[in-house]
Image (cartoon, rainbow, N blue to C red; front, side, top):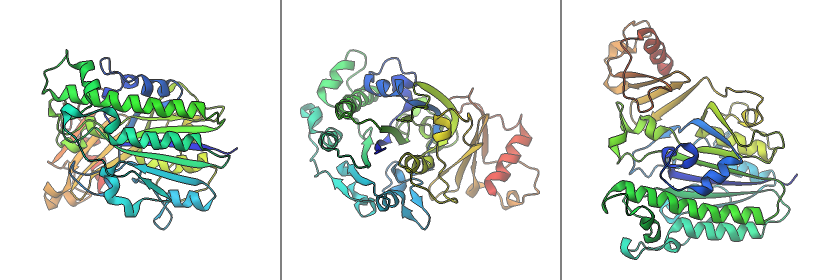
Length: 374
């Protein structure tokens, strides 16, 4: 079976703004269309978070956890197994071009235009989708990985005029929610073109994966609570859906399994039938997709890159700690005191990390802090 895998990843794409994740006011018919044929993961979180203005490669979802063995990019591992690869990147992400795996097809730089003159076709995501649809139309019988990398929501409020008009009656002209909703609908519109091209390609074994490095932008604090914005649920939780050609896949179902961006590498490799290193931190999601297991990981580790902030998420708890702020006395594993610079939230009830319950669940907080130190 000559499998084709299409991956679309975004630096920033809030799950809460997609209809398939519960949004009732942002129009995302094409993301929703894919979700109806996919396994949709409700508890998917990122891995290593960077400041919004960071240039670190870890900012990009496709790279996180993407090494196999001795630091070899897993896409290169696929190529050595006979899988053709094509990576399409928006210009803003080309700064890391030297780390792009395989044969990277990079879009020429598009000079930004004023918002008043902006049209959908001028924007980078529309252009990499155009290149991708041409690539899909030329698919051969060989296995191929096609990866689209997008910034997702821009750092500055911006959206094409045609999509701003959809929500113009609902918000003030300078309301950031207007731009976010319009841009998400623009992304959805472009994504729909890609889905149509894949459907017309008449390939029997195509897998489609959509994910993001972070969720809600940190520039929208009115919806974000918690001790550290970059590790709040609004940012760490991202959309993740896999449409698998596996005939026993639970398509159209949702999964509450804890999953993480790092699991993409092993999952993609398995779709192509390529083995991965036993010590790879990535863990294939195929058993979850097939309904063979309900639980994927017991807990997820997250950290704010190059800082002392770390967090641990289980099915029922979310613990956050700033190790740099804690006294040296708290580094002792025998210490029965919960670190002062730590927070504990009950999950999934406390959606926005509003209520620190560390004082009420001392033993839970202490144990999670010890595991983080380990």
